[in-house]
Length: 482
Ligand code: CO
Image 1: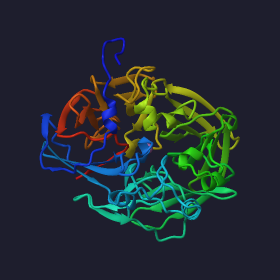
Image 2 (image 1 turned 30 degrees about the vertical axis):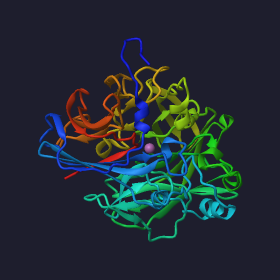
Image 3 (image 1 turned 120 degrees about the vertical axis):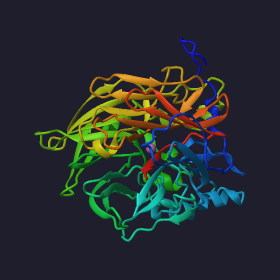
C-alpha cells in the first residue's frame, strides 16, 4: 500500500515468518557511532515459530518463545538468539502440539482441560512475552504463572521457577511492576471458580515468597494484559472482555476465544491500597479495552484520587486483528484499529471515574523512563505507532509523545517495521528524555533486522547494528546496565 505522501509500508508479513536459525555473532556490522556510555545488555522476548509440524498457530501471541540478546560495549554490539527450551518447544520437536496457547488449542481430553484451567499451571510454559528478574534469576514470562529462568550469558533455559509460598492462580500478567524504593515486585494471580478472584501480591526482591496483599472477587473475570501501579494503589482496569469460567472448561475453544466483548458492562477499576490491602472499586459506563498501561500518579492533596494513563481502544477488535488470518491471509488486509492515550481520573472514595484524551495518535508497546518516573508525574512516552491511520495494517513507526501537550514526534522508514522502543537513560541524566531508545527493526525489503539506536530527545538516528537474518516481531525486552 502507498499512502498519500508516496511513502510505502509493505512487507510487514515477513515479521511473522518463522526463524529457526540460532546465531551467536561476536560483532555485528555497525553504522554510526554507539555512545561510549552505553554499556549493557538488551534481552528481548517474542515468538519465532508459528508453523509447527502438525499445526499452524493461530495468533501473534501463540508463537514459540525465542530470546534475543544484544550485548553493547565499547561501541560494539554482539548478538545471539535461542529458542526457550520449554515443554511446548519439546512437544513441537516431537512433532506434536501438546499444550494450549493463547488462541490455539491442541485436541485435549476434558480431564486435561480441567487440570489446566482449574488447577493450573499445566500450560506449556511458552513464556514469550517479557523478560524479568526473580530472586536474581533472569526469567521469561507470560500470562500463565510459570516464569522460565534462563542464563543471561548463554541463553540456556534453566527451568520453571517455583515459589516458596502457597499462592496459586491460573492466569497472571507478564507485566509485573517493580518499586525500586520498596525493592519489591507487584502482580496479580487470577483464580477461576464459580466466583473467581484476583489476588494482588507483592514479591520482595531477592526472594521467592509472594505475599498476598488484597483480594477482589468477580463472576466474570476480565482479560487484562497489564495493570497500573501508583505510589498508593495497585489498580486493575477490568475491561468488559470477560469470560464465564465454565466456558473454559466445556467449550473446547482456545483460551481467548472463550472471552466475550460485553460493552454494556462498562469498565470497572479495582484499587488495592498497597499499605493496608483495602479494596475499593470505581466504575464508568464507557467500555474500553487495552493491553498496556503507561503510568499512574496519585493526585497531590486529593486523597484517594489517581490519574491512570493507558493506551485504549473503543472495542477489543485489536485482539482479533492479531490473528494471523486477519493479518496475513485476507486479500484486503484489515487496517490497524485506532487507539489513543487516555487519562482516567479515578476517585477511590466515591467510586467515580472521568476520562479524557491525552494523545490522539495510535500507539502500542509503550515505554517510559520507568526507573525514575513510574508512579510519578511524567511528560513522555515512547511507543510504536501507525504511519497512516486507516491504511497501515501493522505498527510501522516509533513515536515519542508529550502527554502534557499531546504533541507527537515520529521516526519511520519506507518498508521498515520497528518494534518496542526501550528507553535507556544516560548515566547522570538531568532531564527525563536524556538517553537512547533501543528498538529492533525489520527491514522488509532485505528480509533482515537491525538494532536501531535513536536519540530519545530528538528521535534522530544515532547508529544501527545489522543482524544477518530477520527477527520475527517480538513483544518486550529489558535492558540491564553492566
Ligand atoms: Co505486553
